[in-house]
Length: 129
Image (cartoon, rainbow, N blue to C red; front, top):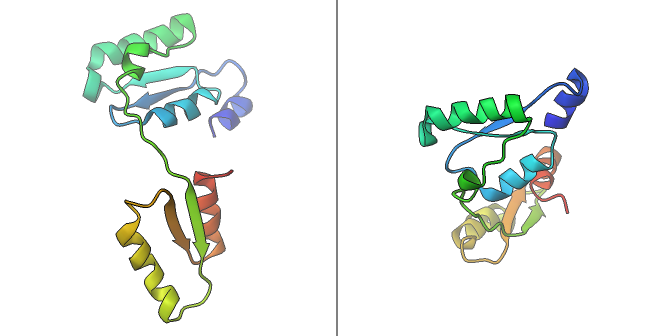
């Protein structure tokens, strides 16, 4: 979406993303792969001085990727997503989400169940490979 906004508005646009202390490191990597010029640390977590300095840095230097802030972001290990499509309901399929949900935290994969094409498309966005 960031790339679309930049393409629509022209190359002079500078878009930065505000992050908080809970923003996972993998999300930052996704942001870096867009047309965003940097991040602005949330003043709620890091104070208004740091947030203001980030904006000034973007306006003067063109980018802002502060390693001291980035190093504080949590690393979240994402498990591969396995998707099960259930079109009909019977005794077995109705219980599948309950059983999987009960054991999902110990499985080496993130098991998701979907019941429609729309749910399937949303899950593919999480794990497109």
